[in-house]
Length: 159
Image 1 (cartoon, rainbow, N blue to C red):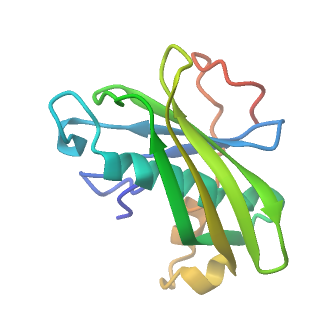
Image 2 (image 1 turned 120 degrees about the horizontal axis):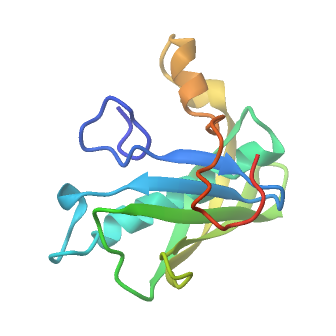
């Protein structure tokens, strides 16, 4: 039922995540009219949620059982993000410490323009300490998507 990646949540962004060979995480997000602020534009809070998710999940590239819990997130809005088409975001870790990490991310428009960028600090927590459910399928759903990345995306090599 997650707002960002929940498959069964009708208001979800139905996010799918892919690791790249360059050590980044790429996310594909489905936005619709329910995610708008001004007509034709994704709400800024939704854009922030997308970037928070992509940066926080980047920890799983280093350790598949690790998750990032947000301590601080700063966003910079450069262009409107349209809804009704897949939104692409990229995230990466820029600094790692024993209990914390820092990362950056951006939402990239179809023409390659960066629409929104963010940087944040995250507390590292094991996935099992965040997953309050006894259902192991829930933990698996939180991991990076294993399906191949769509060929229409030109973001580098993905696994």
